[in-house]
Amino acid sequence: MVHAIGHNVINISVIANVVAADLSLLGPPSISQGARVTFVCSLPNVLQTMGDCDSVQSYLMRDGVILQVQGFELKNSSATFVIQDIVQRDAGQYSCVVRPSQCFKQDEDRVTGNNVINLQVKG
Image (cartoon, helix red, strand yellow):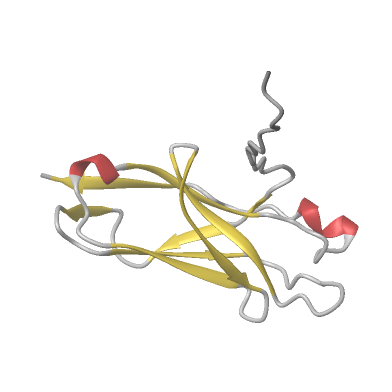
């Protein structure tokens, strides 16, 4: 007879109610392999926050899949993502979203923007 209890825990994070942000590419949308690419994710309007919140998470996505996550600076209303040594598999449609949280006032989650860049990698 076993008298032990397991403590298995699985954490599942669901990203709901994301805000589509503007994504800009510093440089041309068609680049050579081995190059460095810098994306800037921004929101067109200054967000009003509650309490002492000064940043929330932003997500760089390629073809709908999260590629990088980092803090979104509300003071600058932006986040910068860098991909080093680009290869052919890095080609695709990039977008950026910001995840609303308790930091946002209720009506701020309706901000949308131009958030798709088609990156082409030359062989």
